[in-house]
Amino acid sequence: MAKIAVVGPGALGGTLAAWLANDARHDVTLCARTGFDRLIAETPEGVLNVSLTVLTDPVKATPVDWVFVAVKTYDSAATLPWLEKLAGEGTRIAVVQNGVEHVARFNELMPGREIVPVVVDLPAGRKAPGHVLQNAIGWIVVPDGPHGADFVDLFADAPMDVQAVSNWTSRAWQKLCLNCVGAFSTLTMRSTGPVWNEDVERMLRGLVTECAEVGRAEGADIPDELVEGLIERERNSAEGVGNSLYTDRLNGRPMEIDARNGVIVRLGAKHGIPTPMNQLFVTLLNASGSPWATK
Image (cartoon, rainbow, N blue to C red; front, side, top):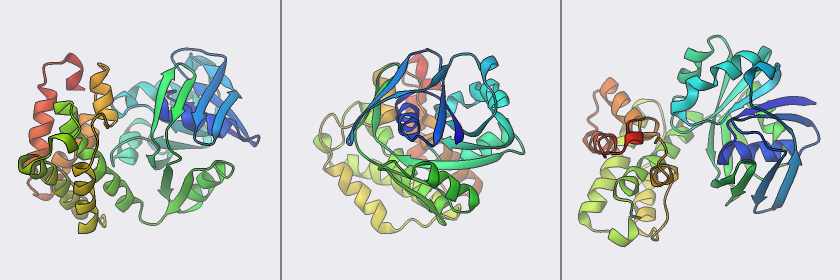
């Protein structure tokens, strides 16, 4: 039986924890700020209502086989008290976060540990502590190799498309191309489709093209067709269709500006690639006048 701890009981962490706990092969512990008795996940495959251990104090944690870190990127350092108790000899740390810097971020926090970077497209929301809503089946990818194969096996009984892939860097940057355009709707609090015009298209094309160019410099394969497909997707988006960055701003929570757009600016500078459109949106979001926008 695999011992698994999930740090971060939000929409994504709660959904993953529910599917893992639904598998009798696993012993799942959820590390949370607020305690609750059961975890309920409304999914496209039905409702999961699972019993699992919920800890609110890192002092009570003990080593496990796998730690899933599913907190926002700006809360990564806050997981250290949990990781220090949960990570024993042979523990693997699966980092389930936005962006492309999973390994670098957690190598600084837990040097010498086995870090498994995870890219996810799993639309979900949190309704209350211990209650999440999974809106689509989604997919998950990790790098191939022994850790990747073991990770995939953890989800053998779950319906998501979970794969260990040889092109993880490409998949991560392709997902970032999708995520980076969310800066527009987050700043304007409007979906792109209903306000579409030449200027909107120019801004969105700048955001995603810059991301693609920096990703290619980082070794990612990002076809031009993907860029055009994302532009077309935004052209046809309906009002009210947002993203997690948009939702966080709407609800007064900190935003992952750096992980979604700032990283493009930083790595662009490293490669000598201009990223003026991403820099513009990073600056405007950070200067939006809201105290949470500086995160």
